[in-house]
Every structure is written in C-alpha cells, then in structure tokens.
Image (cartoon, rainbow, N blue to C red; front, side, top):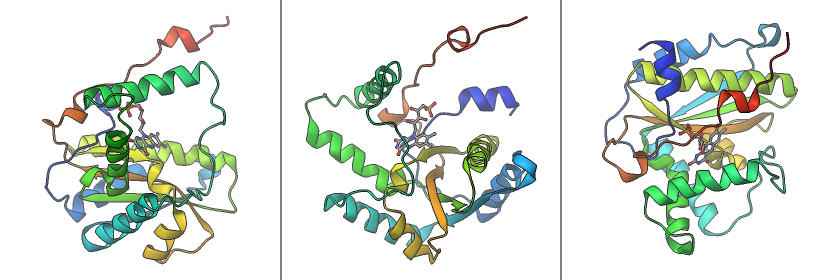
Length: 221
Ligand SMILES: Cc1cc2nc3c(=O)[nH]c(=O)nc-3n(C[C@H](O)[C@H](O)[C@H](O)COP(=O)(O)O)c2cc1C
C-alpha cells in the first residue's frame, strides 16, 4: 500500500472480525512504527501488547469501573473544558456521525451508553496496544508520541489491519498499570484497538469529514 492511500484510507474502526493477529504481524507493525521521528531521537515510546486472557480481564475491569460510575483519573487532560468553537461543532458532528451510523438518537441515552461501553472492550479487537510515556518527559516528547501512534496505525494498514486510537482506554490508568505490572512513572496516553475490520458492521460504514486544507493554511511569500 502506498503512503498516501494508507493515510487517506485509515479510519477509526469500531467493529472487528473474530480473527487473531499473529505475534509476527504485531511485531512487524511496531518494527515499522519505531522509525517515527522524535526530538533528539529520544524515542520516548513504550508499548504494552495485550491479547487473549490478559486483554479480556483488563477490559472487564475497565468496563466494571465505568459501570460503577468511577470517575476517570486519566494521567492527562485530553480536552479543553469547555471546548470552544470551532472545535465544539466539530466534536458534535463527530458524535452525530457515529450515532447516526448506528441509528441511535440523541435522546437515547441508554443506547449511547451501551455503545460507549464498547470502548472498554476495545470494540472486541483481538489486540490492544497500550501506549505509555515516561512521566519525566515533556510536551515535546508527547508530540513524538503522536507521530509514533500514527505510524502504528499506518503500518497496520500496510498489513491489512485496522485500528482505533482510544483515549477511553486511558481513563483508568491505575487499573491498566496494575494488570500489566507497570509502574506509576509510565503515564498512559491511550490504547489502540487493533484487528481486522468487520466491514459489514454499521459502525464501520461512515467516514468523518475534514476541513479543507485552505481553511487551516495561510501562505506567505
Ligand atoms: C488520541 C485519540 C484518542 C481517541 N479516543 C477515542 C475513543 O476513546 N473512542 C473512540 O471511539 N474514538 C476515539 N478516537 C477516534 C476519533 O474519534 C477519530 O480519530 C476522529 O473522529 C476522526 O475519525 P477517523 O479516525 O475515522 O478519521 C480517538 C482518536 C485519537 C487520535
């Protein structure tokens, strides 16, 4: 797959078929991702690959925390509060596209919550990659992490895999760390659901939109 196709065709995938990803393929994806640039080549990334029983038990614990209304204690704040325009409108369109594809109305809180719960099971993906960064590192290294994460998702495309980056999987980082025996010095950035797309699932039938290049670009000569 050429690089432009991988970039343009990657999309967050929220239903996967029941097909394992071989350890070799996961290895190959991460082997490609490690070529991400990073300031002074610090290479700040740490990845915990979870599959099978470990993944299942961890997902159950995360879902349990959510179901018992435990407040998130994420290691970092992802969104501004409040989210201002123009970002708020985009965020709302994003939600509307997802629930629209599933035919879940705005008022149907029960179905919306049921759909959200699927996050904690990584949408039944066979693999979850948990992405950590050392707490001693600064914002610059977090930039590097974004590039690494995108590399994972693009390399996954090269192997016929789909993915969904998930901040939701980082809402209860203490649970993740304790299940994986990872110390508090490793901050959890996100999980990435990884697997083979269920191309027939309604939730996978839509694409999010993007603003045009002209809307965010100014040219200066
Ligand atoms: C760091 C990060 C965290 C995200 N967390 C979630 C999440 O918890 N659940 C979810 O369904 N989508 C999540 N997304 C996916 C975004 O909603 C998605 O990237 C956005 O709507 C654009 O759609 P696309 O990825 O299909 O192009 C996340 C994306 C990123 C980059």
